Each structure stands twice: as C-alpha cells, then as structure tokens.
Length: 343
Ligand code: SAH
Image (cartoon, rainbow, N blue to C red; front, top):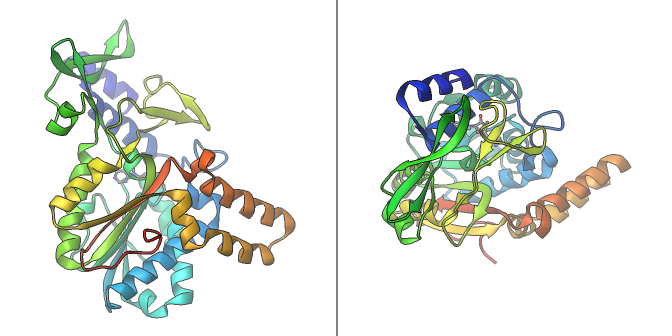
C-alpha cells in the first residue's frame, strides 16, 4: 500500500491502527529497493564485517552437531536483506562441516521482490517463502538479524480512566498521530501500557511449537530491552538519519525496539527452551569475533584490516551496537547451552 493508498483508506474509514500503518509503510518501503549500505538508509551487522555471518555459520555447525548431525535439515533465514549474512555463513559451513553443507536445504522468508532478486543472485539455490508458517517441517536451524524490529507494533496508553492505542489519522491533509479506544493484552495493562508486537509473539509461539516437536534452534539478533515493556520506540530512518515516521510512508525504514521478554514467553509456553538474551558484544566475543578478525587481518591490506577492526569494535562496543543489540535463541529443550549463551 503506497502513501496515497494509506491516506485514501484513512479518508474513507477513519484512523488507522499503528500496526496496520507500519505494516503497509514497511511493505512499500522494502518492496522496491535495497535499503542497505552506505548509499542506502541503514547498515546492518553482516554488512559491517564478513566475520559476523561466518561466526553465525560456525554457530549453526555447533547446533547441528548438538542435534546429532541430522542428514537432512532446514536452514532458514528470516528477512535476509542482501543475502550477505547467509553467503558468509554458508562459506564458513562448507569449510568446517561439509556434511552439514550437504544435509541442509536453504529456505528464505522474504516479502520484498527487490531483495529476493538480490538474494537469488547471491545465494543461488534456495526456496523463498512469504511467511515463517510456510517453512517445511523437520529439524531446523533458523537465523534472523534485524528482522523482528521491522514487524508492526501496537502501542497502548491510558487516557484518563480509559485505555487507548496509537493510530494514524489525517489532520488538515497531513498524517498525524491520534488515539483510539482499545483493550491492551493483560501483560501490557499490568505494565501500565507500552508496545506490543503481535507478529513477533505469534512467530515465537509458532517456532516454539515446532522446535520442541521437531528439533533445532532459532537465533534472533536485534535491538531492544530485555527487562521491561517498551513504551514509545517507533523510529524512522532515512539516509542514515532519524526521520519523521509520518512524513513520507514507504520512503523511510520504520522499526521499533524488540521486547525480548515478551518474545520469549510464547516460545516457552509452547514447550521450547529460551537461551539469552545476551548482549551482542558479549555474544560475539564468546563466538570469537576478536580472534576471527585478527585472522582475517593477517591476509588483508592495511586499509581493509582497519575496516575489519573498526567493524568488530562497532558490533561489540557498549556505546555502539554491543549492548543495545541482543541475541536470543528459541530451541528444542533437549539441546545443551548453545555457543554464545553459556558463560
Ligand atoms: N537481515 C538483513 C536485513 C535486515 S532488513 C541484514 O541483517 O542485513 C529487514 C529484512 O526483513 C529485509 O530483508 C526485509 O525485506 C525483510 N522483511 C521485513 N518485514 C518482513 C516481513 N513481514 N516478512 C518477511 N520479510 C520481511
């Protein structure tokens, strides 16, 4: 749905719930472009250093071994972007565990036609899906970096005695925030209000059920808080700078903080175990990012080595991405503590 269609719907039927607005704005945003990189709107960990995807590939190898080296399994990624993470992961997997490389079938969940095309060129043989529900059955290892933050949220708050939720309306021809009556889920009411990502909760329940039954693990890396409901974190980014989320829907990337506690709960209730969340800096240090970076630097030109070093620092430093970003794994409860999650 384009900006014009969003405005037309509001004009015809009244204020639009925040999650519906965010879903349509992001679908329009991602559908037609590659938003990643210096010339795009934002940069993600796999685009910062090849070591990120390589270490996650080796992480998957360890999980495959802990699963008992199944001879067939699904390797899935949600929202693969440019395919960089998976390309780096598959290279590492092929090097350290050819048996895993031969056993896996690659499944990518991606709604954007433009990004699917980039992924196809990059990764070759794979099966694409619109949703995680469509992933085939069986043991699975799943990876998702900066996927959950793009899923649509609702935001509940109190207006006097009544509960309301954030919505988008038209005021004098411009998009503007408003509030409409609503009933928050019990945990959000108990917290005095805040954001809810229903799609993330449903995804956690879906994955929790299948991982407990069929085996495997799902690793999510994203940004957000681990301890309490997020209150008001919707942000728009365009050209590497903050933008107004309502200014031009479909032209900026809309994200919100991930509520890791709320994401873990439905997976546990479905029978899965949850490991983490662990701050990204700690997680990557435990996986060996400093050591892997040192090895890459040995064969790199000085300028490349400097980029690899500054990239690793950016991912690990507490005042960059090291603390706000976190890793969490939903997994088969029979699995031992997975790499990065055990001290
Ligand atoms: N994981 C990549 C890209 C992150 S950007 C990286 O780390 O670089 C978010 C990705 O999720 C994009 O590929 C986008 O097209 C995809 N995406 C966003 N919302 C989605 C949805 N509801 N279903 C499937 N894919 C989605």
